[in-house]
Image 1 (cartoon, rainbow, N blue to C red):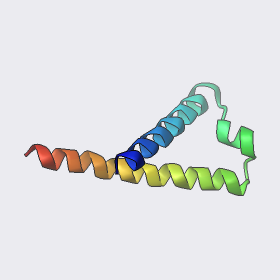
Image 2: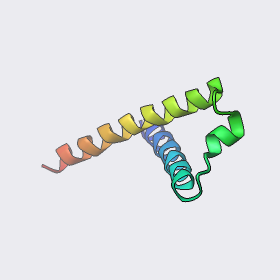
Image 3: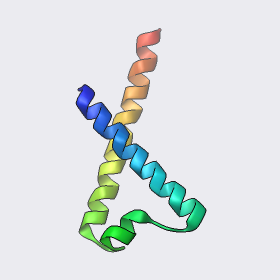
Length: 67
């Protein structure tokens, strides 16, 4: 499970950095690399969303173990 958690965290960091680029410079790295309507770009966005859900679960799991 630790490997999945690390992969999820890494993808969320990439997603966060991409959003920082969008906010600061109006530059979306994913669409620049793969195209705006690309299936690959959509898959990347979905994977980052799934990783965010995994990380939310990890956050609440950590909170429950501290009680």
